[in-house]
Image (tube, rainbow, N blue to C red):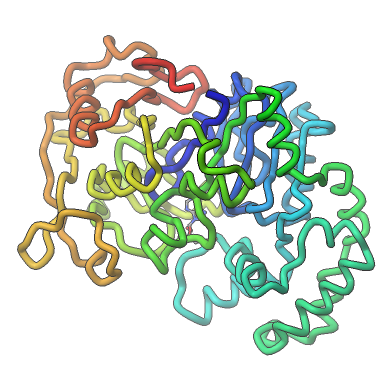
Length: 426
Ligand code: IMP
C-alpha cells in the first residue's frame, strides 16, 4: 500500500502532526497538498515540542523528503523562517525539500487583506495568514506561482498584473506603489534561497510511485473546515478532505490506497461558526487548561465540545475513512459522565445527517449517550489492555457507533504515547 492520506476528521487540531510524524518512519516522502501556514502541526521530536506550519511533519526525520505540492499556498517569508527554525534544531532540509513550481505565493497584501476583512467585515476568525485572499487570487487567475516568484522578470509582471486587476480592493490597504514596494522588500534574497527547492512535484511524486516509493499525505485543518463539505462559510479556503490530495498534488483518485482520519476523543474548533456539541464555558475552560487547548498558530483559546458522531459520520463518508486515530483520550480522565453525541434534533424532530444549511447547523440540538467516565492517569499508556475498563468501553462504543476501527489511541503528546490496535494501517 504505497499511499496513505492522513486527514483531520473534525475542525482541525486533531493531532495529525503526531500521527504523521509517527507514520513518516515508513514513508519515503511526506506531502502537504493544501492550506498554508495557517496550519499548526505540533510534534514532540527528540523530546522537544515543535510546531510546524508549512513544512511537512515528516521532514524532521532524517532522510525523509518533504513535499509542498501545488495545492499549498506558500508564504516565502514564513517558509524561510521555518527552515531556519528547524536548522537551529540541527535539522537541515537541504536536498530533502521539494516545492511545487505551481504552488501559489502568499503576498504581504494577502495577509493585510485577511486582517482587514476580519476587522471590518464579518469576522470568521481566520488565522490572518492571508490564506483566503491568496486562494481568491488563484481562482481569479491573477495569482503568483512559485515559478514566477523565482523568475524576477516574470515576478514583476505578475505582481503588476495582480495589483492592477485587484486595484479597487487593494486601495483599501494603501497606495499601489506602497504595496508594490512592500511586496518587493527582501524579494531577491527570498527567491534565491527558495529556487533550489522548486521542482515539478507532480513528476516527482509519480516517479516515486512508479519506483515503489511509499508516500504519506498530510492533510491540514479538518474535514469540517473544507470549503465544500465543511461548515461554510466558517471554513478555510482549501480542500482538507482526502480527495484534496488528488487535486492538490496531481495524483489520480485510484492512487490513494488508504485514508486514516484523526479525531480527538472530544471536539475542538477555533474561530467562529456552528459547533453543536460545544460545552458550557466553565467546563470548557477546565478542559482547555488541562489539555492546553490553545491554537498552535495563533495562540487563540480553542472552543471545546463533546465528541460528535453525527459530524464524524460525515467525515467518514467524504473522506472514505477506513480507520481512525483517537487522540487525547488521557484528557477525558476524571470527567463523569462522558457524553457522546449520537444524533441531532431540529425543532423537536430527529435529523439523520449533519445538515448543510447554515441556520440548521447553528440550531440543531445534540442528543447524547452517557457513558461512565474513568479516573486515574492513563498518560503514556501503550497497551489497550491496560486502560481502565470505562476508557476501553468509550473507545469500543465509538467504534461501534461509527462502524469504524480505531487503530491508534493517543495517550499523550509524546511520540511513544500511542496505543496501536488491530492490523497495521500502512
Ligand atoms: P483561514 O484558514 O486562516 O482562512 O481560517 C479559516 C478558518 O479555519 C478559521 O476558523 C480558522 O480558525 C480555521 N483554521 C485554519 N487553519 C486551522 C488549523 O490548522 N487548525 C484549526 N483551525 C484552523
